[in-house]
Length: 417
Ligand SMILES: NC(=O)C1=CN([C@@H]2O[C@H](COP(=O)(O)OP(=O)(O)OC[C@H]3O[C@@H](n4cnc5c(N)ncnc54)[C@H](OP(=O)(O)O)[C@@H]3O)[C@@H](O)[C@H]2O)C=CC1
Ligand SMILES: CC(=O)C(=O)O
Ligand SMILES: [Mg+2]
Image (cartoon, rainbow, N blue to C red):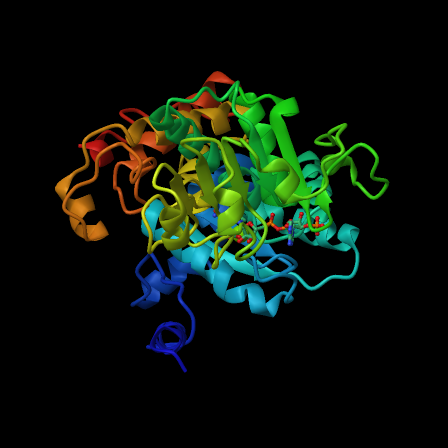
């Protein structure tokens, strides 16, 4: 067994199985404590909440609690491996919520037969949480699931593989194009993958200025085009009237390649045919569409990003989901809307252009990080992400009318100091 594989298994097995635990936040040492925590004291908040439902935020953990919910149908780029196999990833997201945004989070893996069953399960428990982070649910089911849950639930429903990925991709791509001296409105974009991440990434890039007719999208059968009769409604929005059928047919002179598909699907000879100064986001996890070593060996004018922590330019939804939920929870947003997503794009993008604190350099194990080819997007361990992104998102929620409360006084000022 490889060293890294054994290390990863040990990390998950020790010191106790898994990556998360639950701790109590109030004293429970004396009879008096127990009388307050449980019977008879617990009856008081029960009565208060029954009288005024908003008091649930005052007397329970709901306001800082997010459920990470999956059915394991699209686990990273590993495919449909079922609910239990998805549990390490969902615990991982819970770990990231806590580590980066101090949000308590619990993973829930749902076994179901129909989409309606999954929707009912989540809708019926949603009120227990301040928000729901849907994760690793395959397309096209994920689109219907998210839409129906948004309609039925009073708390934010956010499919991270769609919108978290799209927000980080948009932030990174706008910066990468700036470095390469290209205009998003003119960029020719090839998107390999036509699932949850791909559709959402392209829709958000269009909101950021990309032209739909400049995008070629491909699924496992090749180019999405108007003469195909096997397209779902989401793919159909990207159908081109074209005779091109394969990645090799569409890659010539492309400015941008976004990979949200699977490992090693962009061969070096096709990368070589892209336009001068191309941008390649090979975001499939854990193995990218092209390895950065190979991409750089193929051409030195490329900006390459992956979803992994062990290369420069990590385009991964971890840069977004903890912070977008932080902002949404802090103003009790009913939903996460486009205004909040675009505010997150701008906050992430802007941060990459600022000088990087020493602590971030140390954590990244590098001497220098400066906006440019090797640093188009902030590092996940950058402590400025939380105050910047959360504040931008909370302000956008208030301004767009989906917040239940006003901005907290001096919001995030201590975290930014
Ligand atoms: N870096 C990041 O932050 C993130 C990365 N991802 C990565 O993106 C990938 C897709 O995830 P997600 O969208 O959730 O999954 P989905 O199952 O929703 O979509 C997968 C898509 O990939 C397509 N695909 C599979 N094999 C090929 C191939 N050989 N050529 C072209 N397209 C192919 C599928 O085609 P078809 O429609 O024909 O089945 C489908 O459209 C994963 O590798 C995941 O790790 C996802 C989210 C975040
Ligand atoms: C990062 C992530 O969410 C994924 O690869 O599915
Ligand atoms: Mg995911």
